[in-house]
Length: 312
Ligand SMILES: C[S@@+](CC[C@H](N)C(=O)[O-])C[C@H]1O[C@@H](n2cnc3c(N)ncnc32)[C@H](O)[C@@H]1O
Image 1 (spheres, protein in one colour):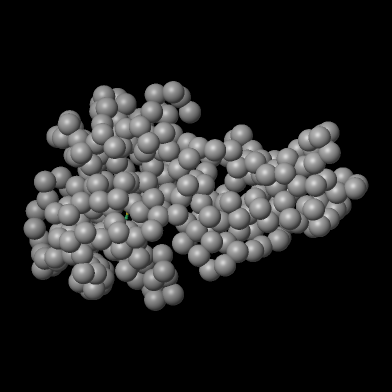
Image 2 (cartoon, protein in one colour):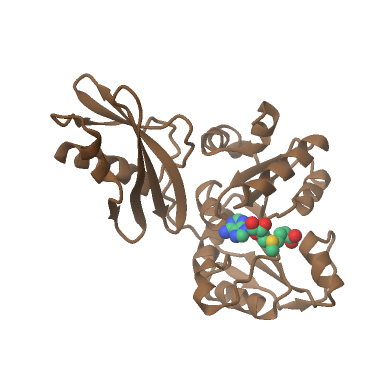
């Protein structure tokens, strides 16, 4: 990725530096979750040059496209984060610091068995209340009336919010790609606005100190590929913070690369752990090509790996 794109897209490492050095100086912060083609976000950024506009997306393709547009239009006040909007709302932003959060046409996931994938849930509403300033606002648009009604119920159940009525057919200052699509198909557009009126916080879990995750294990007597392969498929943790080790790749000179997956409150990260012999021990470290948030599940996976290697 080019240096310029890197300035717009915040990897977990860049996010930690930005969070420490720049975020405390930003007093006008707007967030859009699930920005798709990015046009709404970029329009907002072009009209609010003094404030910072953050976009959060799960799709890296959308992130790259929006970052390129942002550079072409010379918008210095946009930053993009890749990952789940609910988790990053709670973890990245300073508590009670965000002025506005927009969610435009989230995937509704209408089937009951997919309900867990919906963005606006009671957990999301807690994370939203944590990130928003008092008097900060949340705006949601959808083509599905039931989705907006469900979201309204979640917001009403949280004491932090004053929630408006569902508005039908209200025009917006800027039509998103999906809004254009639904309007061209003759569908109605529903909108909801909620304002945070009392303080509310939850407990974030990411460790933003950029310290190395290295741990060491006593080296097993014989360093054999066959013995390491039993690490594959190991899984552990408890309900909120879980980890699994997947494939193992053996390199030359006794080094190995182990694929890990961690899940913290539903937030999944995939990365590689490097195992390197070091002064009679095994050094367990994050592979240089992996960029991750330091979550409880990540830390636990490293500690568990050291224990497992000592047991080999
Ligand atoms: C239906 S599209 C709407 C895109 C855009 N807001 C619009 O109105 O044109 C939903 C977008 O949300 C993104 N998305 C889905 N779940 C998400 C999540 N948990 N966090 C952040 N983005 C998410 C998808 O990748 C997709 O780009």
